[in-house]
Length: 439
Image 1 (cartoon, rainbow, N blue to C red):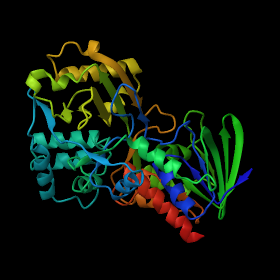
Image 2 (tube, one colour; image 1 turned 30 degrees about the horizontal axis):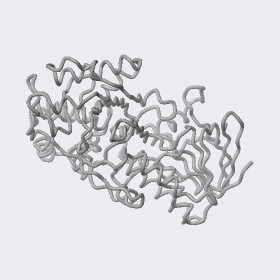
Image 3 (tube, rainbow, N blue to C red; image 1 turned 30 degrees about the vertical axis):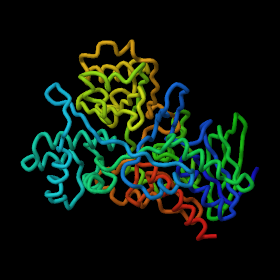
């Protein structure tokens, strides 16, 4: 049995951020991570023949995130401004210069927000006489794609607040140079091994806790491992926490809490995890830059509502033969049970819809890399959203239990950046300061 000042469960952005702050205060930290890698839902892959990384998880920074910028600067890296030229399929043809998003924002701002929170689809239906069919369709598409949400469940108040913020879908968009993996690696490498023990391949099965004492039982590389500490940071994905409120089973990777997290049950029931599938397609050449007389040479995003993969983006400003296909919400849910070959084929078919005259897609495709976040047993989905009526859920989930269990992760962020890497980093710093204040 090993003793520490703080046990951190989860080596994603939240857990590593918490550990970094705690270690700087001189605490002895044990980080337990079930995967064989750090990063959680940040999953950066490098190929020698590509000038840019492949991000199978988090990739873009929406808006000007202070905490992300701070960590990027610490890592001696930079945020790369991504061009914003969007092309949308209309009447069977890709068109640009679309102002529909701005029109939607103005139209929604003129509407009175419901006094009682309702599912977003109900709000759109009630507002059908004030919103054009095109705006209603765009609003639904964004909620399902950008927010990876089920419009029959997601909170109208959350959606409206988010879309009027600085991190909305049309906010300035950036990429960390070298990918998010560079940032995560820097945080991990900055941890002083004198104070921090990072244990990979360590699957936590049980957390026994009482005021001032936590005992964690896990399996590390097939062998039993037990650690104790006065306090613990719970930086597990929302879906794993939700599974932990139900009967433990072999496939859920739920963690048994004893006593149970009964005071968190209401908050957990008012949050949901959106499904996402990403396919990174590496072609022999960036054909979209060459066809139609170079019309799409500076294209950053392609959108075709109704496709299996409704959104795609390029590697700009870098020039690389890489096209990312994105499916979120219901579009991802429809594909989640399919095998990888079928999913890649769906991505190629979606590309073909965008460029029907390009007949050699299969020949031009060198490789495809995908991640289905629903079948990832340590994530069970991508990122969180609030269910109608759950406006206080994130705050309630973030509240510590008897100054012993502290909850981190993007789902617990209340700074306005939930469902993002910035939200995860913020939550890690928050719990670290909470712990330091109670010692």
